[in-house]
Length: 279
Image 1 (cartoon, rainbow, N blue to C red):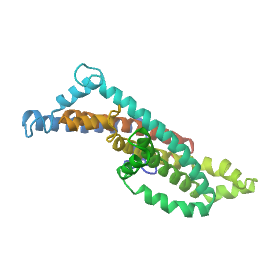
Image 2 (image 1 turned 30 degrees about the vertical axis):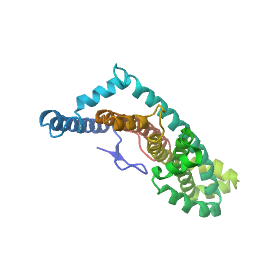
Image 3 (image 1 turned 45 degrees about the vertical axis):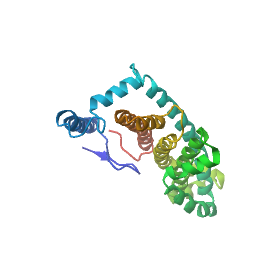
Image 4 (image 1 turned 90 degrees about the horizontal axis):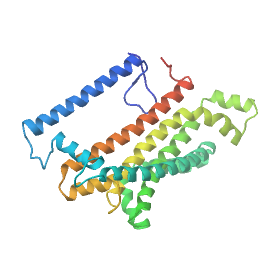
């Protein structure tokens, strides 16, 4: 099976259709094994009380109630998904724009990169949940505090990715651009930035994962909002472990879907740039 690996990938991606189907089969098999072990531990062996570790059926019941069924959680998970997606997409788009502008400035002017790069890297190493108390004290216990954390966590990976991608453009392209008359901002805009697009997309994917995790952490502290974080808090306050697990699964699925979309776009761009061979 022929595979490829883009920057930031921990698992090689199959290039051929047969390889993709084989990988999907293995992933489905892994999921079935997890469900089987989960069912065995909870429904058959009953190693834990249902209120401590619920069965797959109990978690599915919470999902169905929350998305389309009838019951105490009727429609609440669906509304929570809508609220969380609205917040994260708003914050992510703002982060991409701000991070792109700052990254361009850092990539074009080495003194700015030297002055800001180390600080941005240091801030990025701080867990997003650590910024939540500051955001609440500074902006209040509202959606603006959540957006602040989401934008901050998404902004830094984008800025660093754009700056690093511009810095890593092959020198031959810089020389060719200058030879053809491109200098200063024109060189950056017409030569360096187009050449850096594949690596920038890797940064956008990283920024998404950071922003999504930051969102859920911030939402845990906003009472009364329609959000997945609120559903986790409701499950904790009511000792409803099935609701907590259902919400965690939905968070993972949404994050995985968006990551897969960005990964697919990245792979398409890499093929167009000749960095991967389409088969």
